[in-house]
Length: 275
Image 1 (cartoon, rainbow, N blue to C red):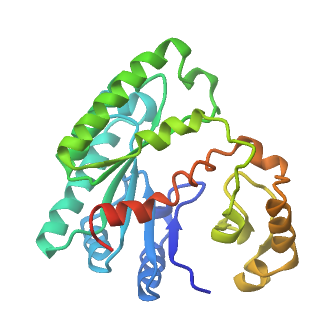
Image 2: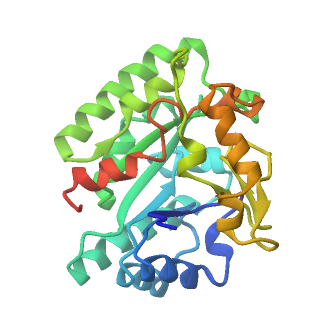
């Protein structure tokens, strides 16, 4: 089908799967780009070595703070920061041992009212552990008491500017411009190509058109992915998108400015001259 990229993520921690290495190895065996999103607490030395050996492209660590105090205040698990930090350092060490530059290490930070004051220090953390990419994301309210307050926005913007300057100095890829565009309203001419580019596959096999949708296109336990991708339901959705008559699930979308948080992998690989 010409699939170029598989993003191993989920509604939980992918490393809990016993067959995670089999999945990742299959992605690379079929010549596709692979991205793994993880909290970074379950890596072992052996697993890290196998991931590097298979040629995996990107490991994205969800990290909420640059130090144990901030990180564990948010995560609520004592000792968890040290495990994440150790995993990132181990990836850098094993890459150097193997003489390779992949997987790229990607630190992804959701900005909250508990960490906005130290977001520029995320770049220092990235430099320390040998990470190549730092991206920031907006918090989408599940808990009201974590939302960034209006009075904190000026400090947040100043710290984003500091983060950008540090990233430029250290040669770290950063998404500040894309992050700021999350607060922009899409123009009336906005087009979305998501139904032609991407699909979400849930652990139960349900295929969804994107992570904001609950509209199931089919289930890969009942039909092949090709049948679902080329099926009537997906094609009807594409017709709606072509008319710019977007479904209700699009109202909370944050991906419209260049398909934020998905397409940048290609830009990143070019940035580091890996493609």
